[in-house]
Length: 555
Image (cartoon, rainbow, N blue to C red; front, top):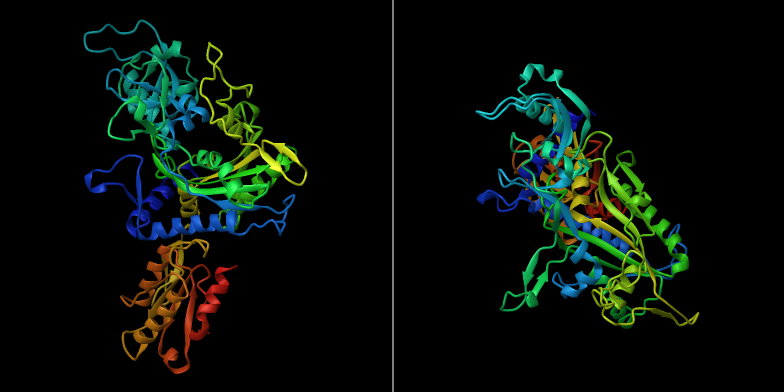
């Protein structure tokens, strides 16, 4: 697919999300707040179904008495829900306080602030158009022309800016002398910033040197706003599970190997949130920390990496749109034994590029040791100040595990599948969007937009229609609708407009099955069940609808 076609597809998906009530811009009536999003009536059901599908797979489906396919042995996973604001020492010991930062630059001319790796640019050779009253440049030089435009349009945006800055007419941009392809500002040495033209200005050398920007949102607990009362909104849910490791072991009958799962909100003060809900400042995570014996950790890492990849495929993402990318050694955190990203070809990316859906990390014993002993350095030893004292002390709690059968005590290793609920929801939205044709009320083929959600994820499972508003059809349709609702099947009732128009409304909402009550229903008790994807229509007894749809939803 061409890049422009991908961009057009994404624009249609965003427009559909607004029109049909999947996703709205937060505080839209006040102009919106960048990096924050609201889920509408259909979106909240879709996202809830994604959460529930994850929870069923990660918590409900596992048991020590049953061995899952590919697993070394049976295991259990328990749930937990921890607070958004935790003791500040948690973030100091975990490393977030010191290391959880992005590089940013400021433009001294327009007071703009940019995340370093989000600014794109390209080197071009030429003479700058001088400011009024200034002498022309004596010779050609290389300039790094930048933009904040992302994706396939970046190259065109840079070319237009370069033409203006170098005094080249729009119909002669092909004469520009480029050096290399579009790349990130992060690749430019600071010594060459004097030849960088910032995104919103036409002059070079307006950017400051890059500096760290901590992504954690600060807040305060109590009545006084002082350093002693400073706290943070959590940037991830994982630490809540690590600090409760001992509590879970002591209060339940779980035995290693076991997992602790949590779904919850996290917050990161992204410098430049972008790409719809993909990179936001408030988002929801679905994480699990799996504690295992060090000698078995590599097996468990391989197991969870493959299982989590297949979960997305099972729920509707095509394998050709996903990759499982093992990190190179240079990408790994100092404590990581191995990390793999499950990535998806989102339409807002260039053809052949992928965005992260979920990371599966082998974290070794870094987290439990850190919270017990203190912050660990790159050699996985307690980091100390010049006076030899720990930089950030741990809790002092014994976070080892004692196996009462082997009589062995050890610090478990951790495998962490960490998924973004919002990113998963966005991926399912992008995958589901389809344009095809279906017959209208006259039997003529007309274009339609259809959201091909997996039935388990679809916000509405069934729509019930009386063909006409008379002859007892509305009463019978409402009876069927009520039976579906009482059975826990998300359904809707619609008696407005022609039947073809009602079908199309439900197609856009992603409803798998439409049930039509007609004159034959009154005579023999059967209804028409129309399939969203195949358009096939079957006659079924109305009395069997609940069991039939329940069975289809279990497939």
